[in-house]
Image (tube, rainbow over all chains, first blue to last red; front, side, top):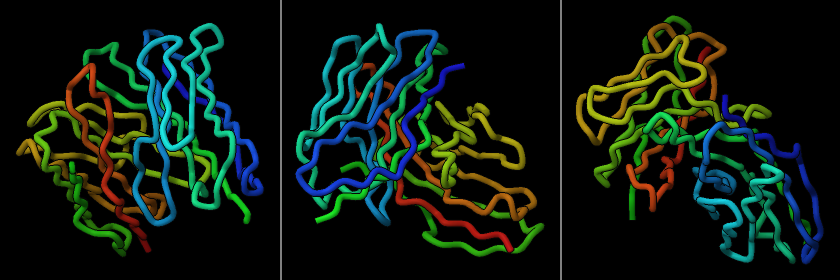
Length: 114
Length: 114
């Protein structure tokens, strides 16, 4: 079945460092891909998404490009801030059955130090 | 803004009790989901529903059931709570839309089974 694999954390960076969180997926169809973020004590919220190959999603300085050839959707940010400290989840939506079933990775905790 | 409301933020129950977790969304979404979130395991889908009175098993349905009598409400039921069901439970909803794929999450219910 469909699955999402993302790098294990925690990832600890200094402020203004570059961030990459790797995410790869397995899917039989053509899923949409998402990054969700969970700030401490809060629910998950959508950070960015891409719906087809070569699309780039972006938000709040974060970017990710849908790479069909490598089945990847890596999250990147050029300069992280302390406020970016959170848990980041890669996800895909499986529409093959006609419904919208979302599958998540295990999450990567990011800690940014001042 | 879309709101997904979970009835309790924290819940403590005893082994063998029947537990109801309630979730209400206010945006007329067709799809609703129940996930559990555990450290190192990410989000795992328990059940989802794409219409009133319709439900489908997710990846870990054992020990759980659901009810969707009204479009806005999706309940998760633990028939006989066990300690291994201690977890964070997340409810989410989404529209049926190829152009607006997005999950909206509640803030979660931390359930402890003693």
